Length: 115
Image (cartoon, rainbow, N blue to C red; front, top):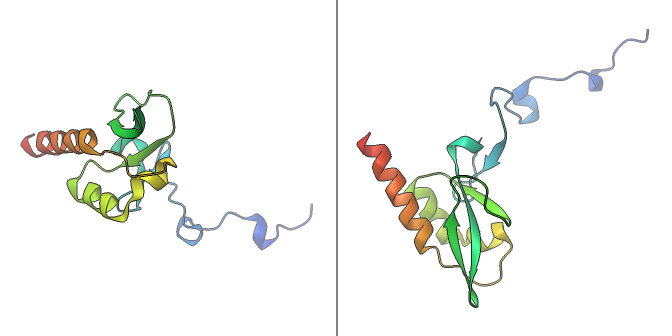
């Protein structure tokens, strides 16, 4: 049997930029651009509302269409809004209405703070 080459071995997790300690799917927050388990992020989709799009939270992760993920933190929401990341993440033209998503994040963060 030939000896293993260095490239054939899996190197340490830190060297490849992959964190193998996370279990399950990982997603990237569109606000802070940090990777986290999908269970820690809120999935949202864009629903057509006439000529514009409405950002809707998808807590059950079952709504159709392209989805994006965001930490349930108002700071991440503000960062994503400032960077205009919602349209890019969902591949939309124009600026979507983020009002319902902002309300959902505010409600989730208040519930977490009170718990």
